[in-house]
Image (cartoon, rainbow over all chains, first blue to last red; front, top):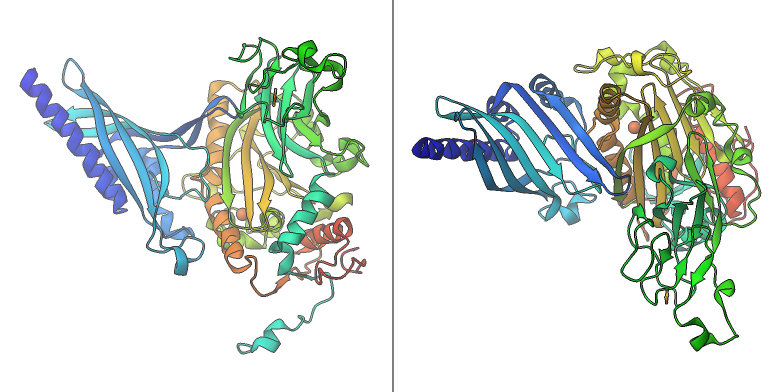
Length: 165
Length: 415
Ligand code: FES
Ligand SMILES: [Fe+2]
C-alpha cells in the first residue's frame, strides 16, 4: 500500500500539472483527454454579500466539450490566462482506485487586449485566485479527473472569461 | 464615403438633433459630478433584494452617489435605510457588506448598530441608544435624542427589491416612478417571494450610461453568436421598444429558440409565474438599472458610477424562493449560460463597453455617438437610447448633443 500509494499520488500530481499546462495553452481537447467520461466541472464562489454558495459555471464532460468547440464563434478577450498551481494535499482511497486533491491556484492574465492594447499589452495582471478541489479515478497507474471544482475567492470578475479555468 | 479629414469627421451627421449625443457626456468630470448631484441624489435606486437580509437584524451596505448606506431589517420585519455614517466623528459605522446585528460586536451590544470608534450605539430604527460617558462629556448640552442616524427613504417593491432615495422629498413614490414600465412583469414578480442566487460585480473603465445603453439596445445582437442563432427570426424583428415617462424603456417579449444553440435547452418548464414559455422581457430604468426576465431566471444589473470613465456594475440572478434544489440548479444553469461571468454573452457585452470607454476617456476629442436608427420602434430601432437621453437632458438641463447648451426638447426625443 505504501509504495502503491506513492505511485498513485504521483499519478494524481502529474494529471493536475498536465491539465494546468493544457489549460494554459488552450489545448482544450488535451485537457478533456485527462477527464473521465463521467467528468463534472464547476466554478464556484461564496458570496458574503448575498450569503450564498454560488455556481458560476458547470457542465458535464459533454457540455464542456460543446462549450470549448463553440469558442471560435464568440468574441473573446484575447489576453491569455496562465495559472500557478500548487498541489497541497492528495488523499488516496483505501482501495487505491480514487483520490481527492486540493491545490492552490492563481490565475494571471497576460494582457494582449486590455482596454487599450497599446498601453496594456505585455503586462501581467492578477486575474483570479482560489483552489482546485479535484476527484480522480485511478486505473492502470493513470489518474483521470472525475470532478473538478474551481473554488474562487472572487466575486469581482470584471470582464469575466469564456474559457474554463 | 471615403475616410474623412478632421473637419468632415467632426461635422454634424445628417441626422436630426436628438439622434446623436456628444461623447463628452461620457467623459467629463464636471458632468459626472453634476449627474451625482442632479440625478443620483434624487432617483430611486434598487440597492439590493430583501432576500439578502431575510431575518430581523440582518443588514446590507451599499453606496449611492458616494454616500455610504446601511439597510437593515428591524425586529418588526421592516426594512429601513440609513446613511452609514456616525453622527459623532463621521466613522463608517458598518464595514462589512452584509451580516447581522443580532450578535454583539467588540465595541457594542447585541441588537445594536455600533460604531466601533467610540462605541455609540443605535437601534434598528436609527435611534441613538447609547453614548459612552454621555453626561460626563456633554452634561446637559447634547444627548442621545440629538444624535440619531440619518434615515433615508426606503421601499420594498416589485418582487422584493429594496429601493432607496437620498432625497427626503422625492417627487414620486417608487410606484409612481416606475410602476408603468414594471406592469409587464408585475404579476410574474409579485406572484410569490423571489430569492437572489447569483451575485458578482464588474468594475469597468467606461461610463455608466454606456452600460445602460448596451442593456437597452439590441442592435448589438450582431456580436452575440448565441442571440443571432437563437433569436433572429420574424418575431424577434417585430419585438417592440416601449418608452415610458422618466426615461424608462421596456423591450417587449418574443419566443426564444434556445435549442438552436448547441448544448442549450428550452426554458419553458421553469418559466416565472404568469409568464408564457420562453418569453423574454427587459425593463430598463433611468438612470441605469436593468431587470431582465428570460423565462426561467431574472437578472438585475445595478450601476454605481465611480467616475466619468469608471463604473461598478453589480449583477444579480433571482429565482423563486420555493424552488426545489433541482429547479434552482436549472435556473442557475440557465442564468449562467448567457449571463454568468463565464457565460456566452456577458463577456462580450463587457468587452463592448470597455472598448467604448477606451475611445471616450477624459480629454479625448468630442465625438458623435449615433442613436439614429428608425425601424418602426422595433428591436433595432434606437428609440430607447433617444428616449433615455431626452430625459437625461431634462434632468441635467444640458443638450446631449451639445452639452454646453441648455436642454431644449427635440421632436425626436419627444416621439
Ligand atoms: S465616530 Fe462613531 S462613535 Fe465616534
Ligand atoms: Fe448583450
